[in-house]
Structure formats: C-alpha cells, structure tokens
Length: 376
Image (cartoon, rainbow, N blue to C red):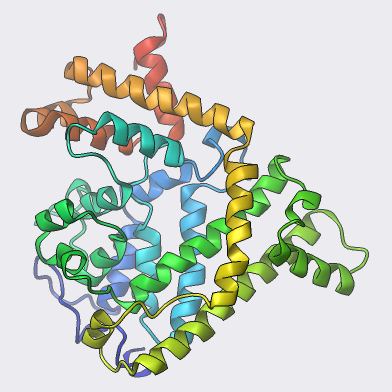
C-alpha cells in the first residue's frame, strides 16, 4: 500500500510514531494495528448503546454511535483512497472519533460540560483522546492503546488554547495554527456527510419529518426527482435509500474533486507542507452553499422536534442528577472510580458518566433515585 501513497500522505516512514516503543506488528502495518486496537477497545463496544439522535431504547433500527462510526469509516476510507492518502489511518480516526461521547448524544455532553464548568469543563474530543491515552486498560506495559501520533492527532478535532498548552506536542498545532494530516481533515467532512444524510433516513423512519418537508431542501429535492424520473413506481424505503445514497455520493465526489484541485494548487509534496498549508480538504463553494439549507432543516425540523427535545430534556436531568449524587457522596461510585477520586473527584465522576451507555445511565439513575429499585 505504501507504494501507492502520495508523498503528502501519512506513512510509517514519516510518522512521529508511538509514545511507547513496540516491536513492529507482523503481517500488518502500524496504522492497521491502531484500527484493530480501537475496534477491540471497551469504549468502541459501548458505542452500540449510545445515542446518535434517538435515545437507545426508542427502537432497534435507528443509528447509534457505533453504526455512525462504521458509516464514517466507510466514507473516509473511500475518500482517502481517491486522494491517495493512508486508508488505514483514515479508518482508525473514524472509528475513534466518537469514543468520548457521553450517553444521550449532544444533550448528554452539554449537561456534563455544565456540571464540569468549575472543574475544567467536558469536551468529547478531549475525552476520546483521554480514553485512548489513559482509560483503556488492556496492555501490561502501558495505559491506554498507545496509538500512533497521527491517529491521536486526528481524534483531536478541536481544542482550546488552554487545553492545547497541556497536551504538549499534540496540542502545538492549535497554538501555531498549523493543520493536521489530510487523513484527519477528510474525517471531519466524512463525519458530516454521514450524519447529515443518515439523519434524514432516521428522521423519516421515525415519522418526525416527511418526504414532502424534506423536498423543501433543493439539494435533496434534486436527487429525489432524479430517482423518481428513473424509477417512477418506486416508493417507501427503496425511494428513500436511493435518494440518500445519491446524496452521499454527490457530496463525496464533490469533496474529492475540490480537494484534489486544492492540493494541486497548493503544490504540497510532503506531510510537512500539508501541515504548513491552509486547509486543503473541503467542499466546493456550490456544495457548501447547497448544504446550508439541509443543516438548517435538520436542526429546526428534526433536532428541535418536540419529541426529540423531550427526550433530551430527560437525558440532561439524568446526567445532572448522577453527577450531583456522586459529587455529594463519591462512595456511591464503583470501587475503581472511587479510588481515583482522591486525585481528581470531578474528573473521575465525569469519566464514569461519560463511559455509560444510554441504558446503563437510565438504570444507574433508577438505582440511585427510585426507592425499592434493585441496586445490584
């Protein structure tokens, strides 16, 4: 694979490497090893029961953080191949990018961030990094997963200057306004392509939005018209799927073509030149403008739908109640988290809550607040 990579791609030869030296893995590359370690991690398995938009108990067919991460990885790998950058790295970043998400999606994150406002705050990108660097316990010789530098870099999409100063080499690019690898840059867009289009699918499946409503977004209406012209008798799930897959394909192709042109114009030949250049991965101006009405529609018609907001309100209260109970009496925590409270009680509690699945958080809430609830 390395022979096919462009000079500006991340490879084992130009990588910063791992924090702790390890023997090279036989039969696979270093970034394949990263991907495999992430897939086998406890945090990755928990994503199966964490909310994407709909709380996990609402139905078996809606996307979760796990299925979303798999979909992002598929899109990221396809884009990486087209741009001749490291597919294994792009895939590893995609699988890891949501590891730090709380239960109940963004509502859970916002609630936990509010709870932690006097203790450094909470941000899921930093939590994802914290998981792969410290919280996963698999290996005899180190905490975390000991991932390659570029994988860890790609996980960290956003970072405040205050946090960046604490991260050493990994945070330096945020202070120096330098760019991450192309593999990391393309993941940001693969993430958006996945959730925008699949949230349409889930919203329609849940009955929160209708085809007639979504046709008000020209980008969607254009592809829906094309499907109906080609398949006049098509209805139901097939009609929706044919439309959504065309939307994904159109955005991915636009991203590839626009990024290829930006790379050529910038004349980058090495990874270091990528880091010094402006952002090179992005949509065309036309696609960017076409996507804005879709983002607005999903926010106002789906994410702010009263049924979704009701569930998110309950989710926020669940997170706030749990945090308050554990802060008042940390003896309620499991032993491994109680032991860490001596060092940093709020952070130990945040780590425990952030690691919960939706169903576990609801069960823990009942254990603590429902009289007569089984506590085991």
